[in-house]
Amino acid sequence: MDYVQLEKDVKTLFRSLDHCNEQVDKANDKIGLVNKHVEEILNLLKGSSLNKQDVGFIGMVLDIKKRLEKLERFKDKVIWVIVGMSLTSGYAISEIISRLINKK
Image 1 (spheres, rainbow, N blue to C red):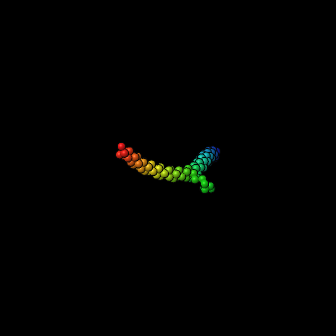
Image 2: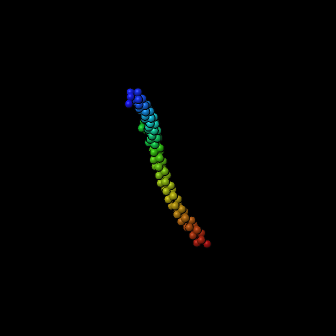
Image 3: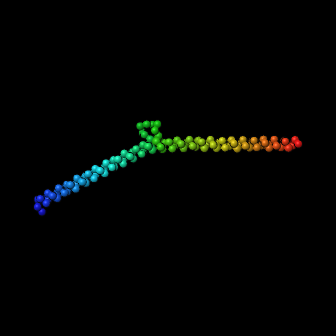
C-alpha cells in the first residue's frame, strides 16, 4: 500500500465516523424530545410538584370516585326512606280501607 491510498482510506474512515457521530447526535436529540414528552405526560397524570392544588388526572379521578361513592350511599339511604314511607303509607291506606269497609 502506498501513502496516497492510506491517506484516502483514513479520510474515508473519518467521513464515516463523522456520519456516525451525526446519527448519534440526531438519536440523542430524539431521545431528549421523547423524555420531555414523557415528563409532560407524567405531570398531566400526577399533577405538578410545584403546585399543590394541581392534582392531575389521577387525583381528579380519585376525587370523582369519592364523590360518586358518597352519592351512591345517599341514593341507598333515599331508597330505604322511600321503602319505609311506602310501607307505612301502605299500612295506613289498608287501615283506612278496612275502616271504611267495616263502617258499612
